[in-house]
Each structure stands twice: as structure tokens, then as C-alpha cells.
Image 1: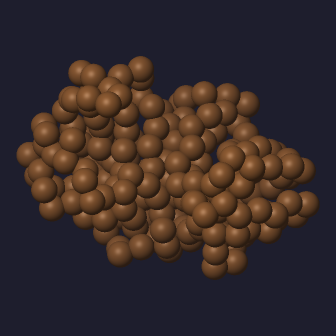
Image 2: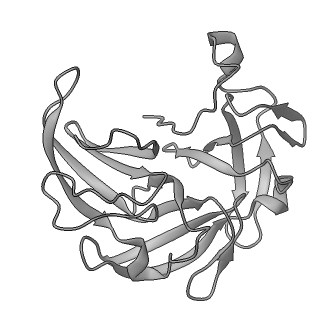
Image 3: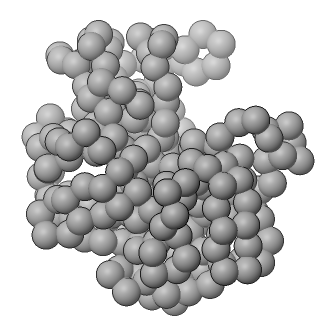
Length: 213
């Protein structure tokens, strides 16, 4: 599908045969169905005619990051999640400033779209302030996120992490139970890992994408 040599560093299911993907570097070649290149701040939609060993289908632009201020070198989208109310939760590899909020790599932004696709527009707000709840050391970049129906955040980081009552590594997934989200984030972490990657042979790997149905 034209992604050889690139790493998918964020994904989500849109429906049973449509995926949303972001890659870890600017993509010079044109993907099937696209009219121009994409960069690492974009999210593209893949509508599959077949999946598995013989994958086929077409791509289209879903979220154009440069349209909404994600133009800094640190604006690589490395995690995202679709919320039931239509907002898109986004993590970036570094500190970004968009509209009024700014976010670091341990934070999550919520984008409320007015339009999506080739002309993306909408507004950002801070969704999760990691430094309020024990994240913020340099290795603790959130690089995978999923949000379940009850609002719990399933998180993984780019390196080792230590939060109140829990520590782990980049192959693990842990859970934050919020009592408040936004600029003043509050809540507690579940006392055990949701997924211990080292127990399943992933000690040398970084989990960079998760999806919790």
C-alpha cells in the first residue's frame, strides 16, 4: 500500500473495513487515492477492499494537521483516538502550540472538528494534562492512547514511566481513571498494568498503538 520504509505510529478503527493511520515521518510518495504527499502531523483514512495478507484499498485525507497549526517539527501525531462525541484526541511527539492551548508530549489535545478532510478546521482544547498526574519526565511521552466507553484512558509511553502507585516500560499499557479532565486533570491510576508486554515477549519493543473496543 505504499508504506514500505515508514512506521505506522498511530491508528484507530473507523468501521469494520476503514482504518485511520498516521506515520512517523513525512511521506514523499503518493499513496493510492491521494492527490499529494502527507506529513507526520496528518491522519489518513484507508478504506479497504481487502485486508490481511493481500491488502488492497484506497487512502484519503482525514485530518490535515497543517491546516490547524500542527506545523512544528514536534507536531508528529504519535497517538490518537476518536471519541463518541466526534472529538479527536491527539498526542504529539513534542511540545506544540495550537490556537490557545499548548501541549507537551505527556499531554493529550482534543480537537473538535467543524470540517475534516483536505480542508480541516476546528478548535483544540487540552484534554489530559499529564504533568498534573505524575507524567512529565523526558521518557514519558504518551505514544499510544485509547479511551473506553466509561472514559478510562489506556496509555503507553515511549520509554519507562513512573506514576503514583505504578511504574512500567514502553511495552506496557496502563490505565488512568479520571475524575476531571482538561487543564486541571485529576484522577487515579489503576494499581496494576492493563497489559504487561514483557510477559508476552515484547520486552525489547515499544507499544506505539493500542485500541480498546
